Length: 265
Image 1: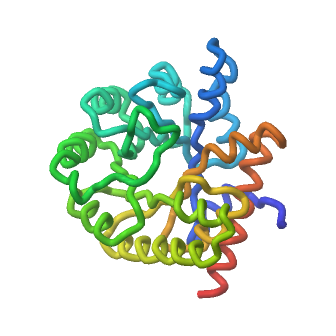
Image 2: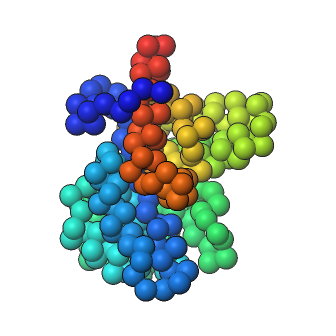
């Protein structure tokens, strides 16, 4: 593995792949016991120092990890872009319009789920989603839709006027954990095809969910993808090696994968 280079220089290079770090599960640990420790905003600052390009935080209806006060502090203290993940509800819309983060990623949300279980059903929900997309964009907030990697979801996202789609990589990561080589290839093909279609439709392409050191490379090699959002694995790995080294190692793997992709084209 190569040593991570100068991130500022890398950011200026063609084909640079951004890393957004999701800090939700620092807050999960804090909330397990109550109180103020560990502080997710402190984690955001450390992520910035380790080379993250942005910070993601999901304010859920039940406030199971990130709290309203965390969003207030992140918006006031961060110099990096803040990506607020949120359900398409009036409560979350009011919060987003009050804070005006750099971007809002609309995600499906069910009270009983442990984590986001799939992409938005943008095809059947276009009518209800349009209101939120329009309101956020009118406030100058970039709008991302978290979708499954398929052509119909990409087309519906473009029709809605989204700025970005974030492709759900969960199925790919699950197949990799199962050692299902055929399934891995099938899911990677879906991601690649959706990324090409989204880019052709004028959408910025992000990806994320379940990515690890072992699975990030194949997704990072998709040239149309310009940002990966990774959280749970990095926070878990931080228990063993520290957050700064975990983020730096992920950045290194992303840079290596991108350079291989560039040589292969």
